[in-house]
Image (cartoon, rainbow, N blue to C red; front, side):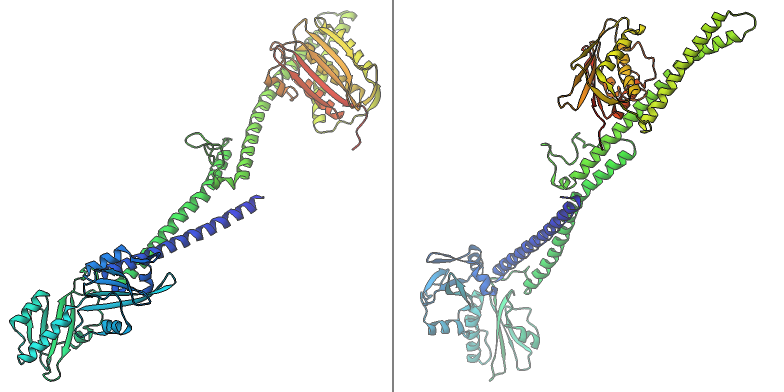
Length: 583
């Protein structure tokens, strides 16, 4: 998969992952809000629950139905009781029910129970709940002593002609920690008992709000108006379920608080997920930028972690998920860093070998130039008459030195022509075995090879190949001369010729049992300007001999390779085709 497709796929997955996280956070927040509202309503007043909320608090296990513990605790805190009635009117669950409460209900009894409000001892709330493929009636009751107290107040007041303050009535109100207030026809305060905060005048707004379902108030208040006397009677009893810190509109307050919390949660979620996403996406990019900056400064190494490990890799040497999508780019940067490092090292080596070559070449040119200047000065002087033989000897020496200098210049020119493919080769068919044998004989007769044992061996009797004779000879001479020059006296040098297995070419191998070469010398053996070899004593030469040999082999469509080990000698193998390759 291309990097573009990987990035698109990665970003799409992360976007949908971000949406899923937001959705999950929103869902969890709504669930928490719903549970909180339900628990608050249960704690404040179970009568405020809806049928669906109450159904979530019921549990059916076989034929047994029960109510959640927190509902029972709230019922107990409100001094109430609860029953669950099945479809046949039978009570299947009871909690804190009075001793005289029925165990089953007929329709008429049920209506009489829940719709009587004049003297009922309880406030009743009921729900019809569907659960486990059945319908259930849940009845919840809380004490309502205010109805009985109101009846006593009205009876006493009528009997006493408007004077309800009797000792018996006050005892009844004291037992329930209740109070009463009486207003005249004009709404002025006429009498109050146990309620010092009674308003001096009866407020119409207060009258309208009385009995409007205020669920969390300090008192349960009821009022009655006597048409005959024009008196208004108000009775209040202590509300056992009153919670001072909970307002009547607590659900609305909770909704506002929950919405604010939800906004805060969403903001935190966006910040956290956004930071995580930015870190996940940005960290690999920042690492690449840092890497590129190091490359620009010439530091061709990937920035490591503080622990020295590669950034983006685990301890098990596996890519981290956030870095895996950029693996191709990291590999490319790694390859680029290694290439730049090798190029820089190669450039340094090239500069060093070039300086060494220029120094050696200057030395090699100064030596024959010194001889030429010396003999020229001798011939130029008029103080002495030189014999004809002496003049001829001086001339030969000058010509030999000039030829040597010309050879150096030609080598330099040749290597650049070979490098730029500007050297045309005029090939012709020659007898290869005989040609190499003669070259070897010539090297054996060279005075510089007197102390070496040079041997020629042919594994085929004879064959012909198309080569450029002059440059083919130059290849063999350069490599053979290099083997002789850089090995100690007594070294055995073997020149061998063999046919390739495919019969499409031949191989020429020049091997010695000298001191061998180190790794650095092998790597740079065919580089221009490089001076090296088996020993460190002889550093003369242009440093172009082996480079020219390799370039000439390649110009003949051949290949050249070297095998060497310190202390075990060196073998240079060249392979050539028998005929010119057709492109």
